[in-house]
Length: 109
Image 1: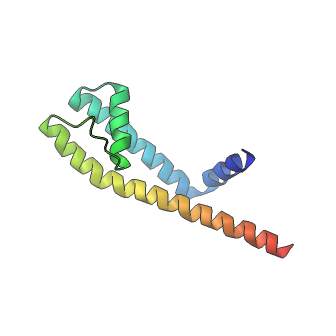
Image 2: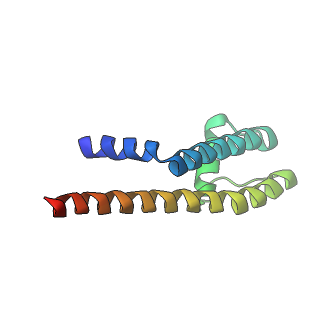
Image 3: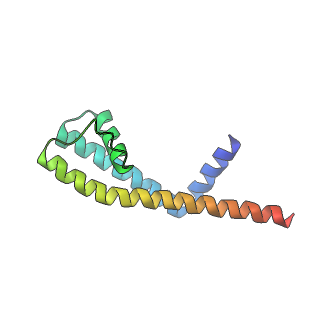
């Protein structure tokens, strides 16, 4: 459990990670509000659809019914998937860096 908190703290110290975390959460809020207003879904359903859309899971239990909702979803997917991929890439690179630092520390001992 301590490893988890240390890793989380080290992520937070990384400016690239913080910026992507902010951007990802901001984009989820945009999607949630948009689906709430456009499709009239509940806040939870709107957030749920935003998350499964950005992660490309797409269970199929929800789908936009309005033309505006469909147009928004197309743009949301194109921008959002790139954002999520950037987020995952940053996590991977940060984890890789931390692993290399730990390995170098052990080798110096």
